[in-house]
Amino acid sequence: MPAKSQAQQMAAGAALSAKRGEKKVSELEGASKEMYESMDEKELEKMASTSQKDKPEHNQKS
Image (cartoon, rainbow, N blue to C red; front, side, top):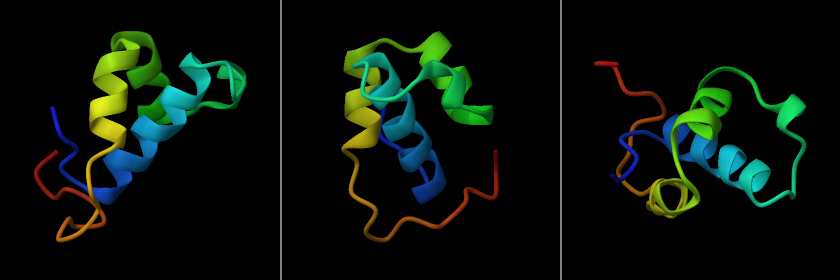
């Protein structure tokens, strides 16, 4: 599932870093922590690799 906003894409990137051991899980907050717990690495990679071009900073309908 591709990210719908820049904020969602960045949260997925943070969660992916934690999944890979590049970042401490204790440093995650909010959406990135929820994504870490509920998504696998493949899903996070797909969401984090979404282009930010033409994406709003925040999704208004979430």
